[in-house]
View 1: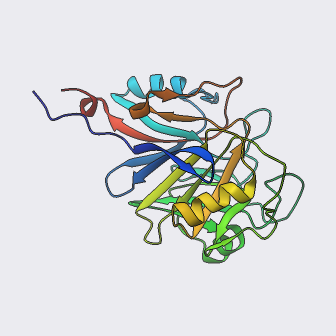
View 2 (view 1 turned 180 degrees about the horizontal axis):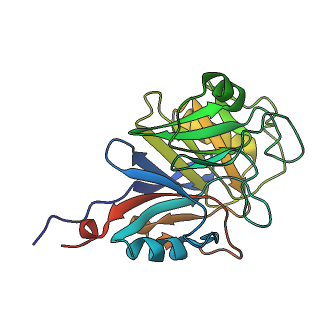
View 3 (view 1 turned 45 degrees about the horizontal axis):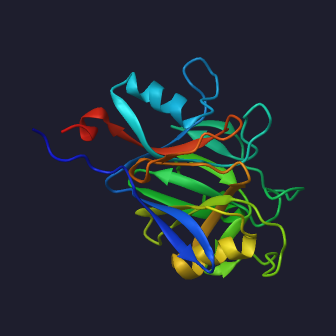
Length: 239
């Protein structure tokens, strides 16, 4: 009999300032965090279950997962997107309509053993060699400060999801609100409750999470664009 199954990420439910959130922490030194968009036939995976099934055919499985950035109707990423070294969308540095264009926005950069949320113009200047990357916006927390456009009493409330990273890049902390919240509330979750200096908004309203240890795998009403998730060998799920 093998060792007990190891969780792909540590997920929990937290309550902060009157709202509940699902929080999942990924240790980049131990876990295989990847981005996914298209299958072998260039069709968007769209759903956690579809991606999990594709991984099972290669002797792997999907653990924790979350939607990972804004996308067009055909599921193409709105911003910069790199998957396993292949760039599918260039970096967008201009402002524009919608949340994505509410500068500053940012990029989640995945490298071997680390993940970093980096403000977009800083990302362009530093040009890190990301194995995979996804751009979204707005930034929630920049160097310990909330995005300057966030209003404490904003009535724009949605189920929202995003990611923050530790200073050494070894931990990526993902969060989704379990009820509608505004940007200010969601940003404070990362800055004040999770104590993270860099955090990036992924999306709102369509936000979904897969957290197997909580018995949760959101389906939603439509297919997703980019998905981020932890991949583990099938052997790790068996005794």
